[in-house]
Length: 428
Image (cartoon, rainbow, N blue to C red; front, side, top):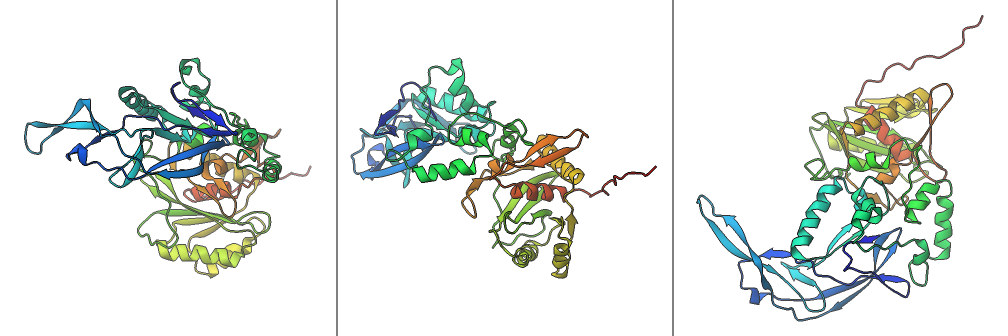
């Protein structure tokens, strides 16, 4: 976890990280008399960090009297409609004594820029530049935090590079987050340790707050981050489609990876828009969900969203599921056997779509049926180059690759499936 500018210091009290409110010089333009400004409630927070992320610990509300807004030395020039003239308006910086939070148009704002999960932000250089000049001109402060991810990012440079040596830094691991000074108890810690046992790189990132990447990961952290859709990267914010909503006249493709007892059944839906593919829906079914329930869910989406151009299903050792789906009037469904060459073909297509900026998705997390996040699921699959030149895929024990393969199936549904080459021995 990093905090910018050496005037912003982290104070440790009883093992917790306490951060004071600091002035950032937020500029607000108003036509009203500044003396009419009203201050309602100020909220202060006590913060501590786990996995180098900031979590709210306690909230305390208190009523205070505001300091009147003061005009800055700068003014704002705005053009008047249909006229070759401009009007000058004063721009005000609002300060509140002892605390720099205030209400503006019924919204609580703060004289402090907080950038969370900075290491997962696409095109972070541009955002950092905007923050840098804003803070420099207003003499404000900014707080940055993140779980370590890729090393070709601003957050990594801030934490390690000598050119950023004037920034205050704070590194919080699981050790500083143990009870009674933090939220982590011994039982939970051991549970996490067991779950991450086969993936030491994940433990190092999530619990030690260190940069670590397994070189055998099929999709790199930098590539995964690059494809997160934002206004900066894509020109729009992507939103996932909701199950209960109706959508029509869309080019939708779906992938269904089937599991039941140890693995999850996962449905992923992508939309094709002018040669690019946008993630629109991810459904992770609880363990032991019957295939009949999964088929019913797919059939409902098909009818509600106007159908799928193609639906590819993992039919390895379960061809009957595809037949059941066809008998249930699920259209354009096609089974895929997960042989080694076929998996390599699907994984390669997934990576190519991302490298060529043709697969985009929002950043999101989920809590059920297990707690995870989209970018972590994309980073889970490992590969191994065999002596015969083929590529074998696997995932660390305690993790799940069902979301990964459902996504690969959905993108694979956008291309024609060729016949798999037959490999055999010719007797002498």
